[in-house]
Image 1 (cartoon, helix red, strand yellow):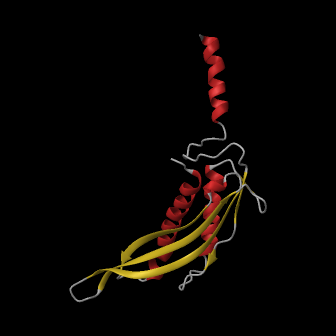
Image 2: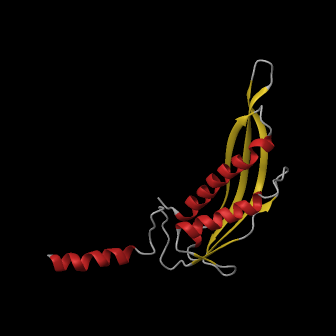
Image 3: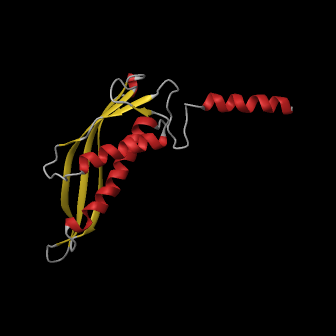
Length: 165
């Protein structure tokens, strides 16, 4: 029995390598490389660092959550994206018709190309938001709100690309 367990455990472990990660990512064993093109900012309101921050956050998420290696050309999977909108809107109005809460919404469009399995390709928009007190100016809260929204957007892109539940 001990010999059987000694044989079976390594076989099970080896068969799982490359197919699953502890992040929930399901990546085929033949997929080795990825590419993320710099996001392009086409929003009417432009946050100067948003495109670079989003690009870097997606690269960091893939590097830290998978065994894929970043490559500049001919990667097994590639991402390109556009920041479609960066909007501030009132969300809560008081009795004097004044906003008490504002909402920062960021919408991105992402194109994912999987050269190993073209059925997985997609072009999708992702949108996330954060509300903040209207007594604060956007510049007071913008950095922290954008960071939180970016984390969620990157998680959405990663999940759609690599987590096949």
